Image 1 (cartoon, rainbow, N blue to C red):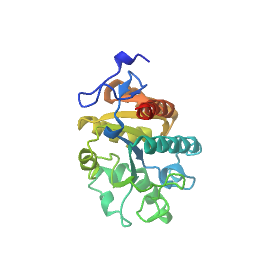
Image 2 (cartoon, one colour):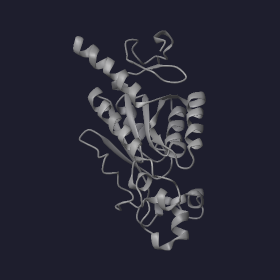
Image 3 (cartoon, rainbow, N blue to C red):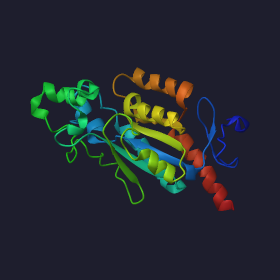
Image 4 (tube, helix red, strand yellow):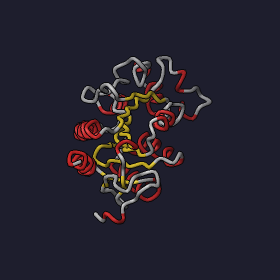
Length: 246
């Protein structure tokens, strides 16, 4: 890693720890950084959840869950704000939009329930098992949970206000699905002047692996940076070591 070539925003101290990333390293102050955990709900990560019932492969989500757990531990130790998202709607799906909304026609959850009426009210409905976060990832005191009604975590949510109130400008992204809600939120963050980093091994796609790879290309070429959990650990252990030495 070339330390001299690391990106450093003008709001970031030159002494901030450096995260190894592609296409270049980036300096991140933990106090200006949040770990975003996108939609790690039973719907997206568990057998019998929405993605599974809609025909998407969720058989290999467990390693991603384990990587996100590691990222959460690193964040807590480094003083990085942890933010969980839950995607879905009210039990009557009013928030999902009717036939006048493209969401009504494109949401695979809504389409699956229309094809299988016995599932009506069970997929992505607040209060149900499908909507809840997986057992391995439960928020603790100080973590923030935000509900969102569409793919992007910035749309009709408090995310932007939550971040700005805390002086946070850097976002580390994890979760499901890489190519849908993760990418949508990272892109919207880019347009709102947030620095987005996608943690490759802590994200999982909806669809073939090529969909994940396409998002990695989009992010590192146009919208942000790509890194991994091991690099996150190395980056913020630097900060802890410096603090201990001081």
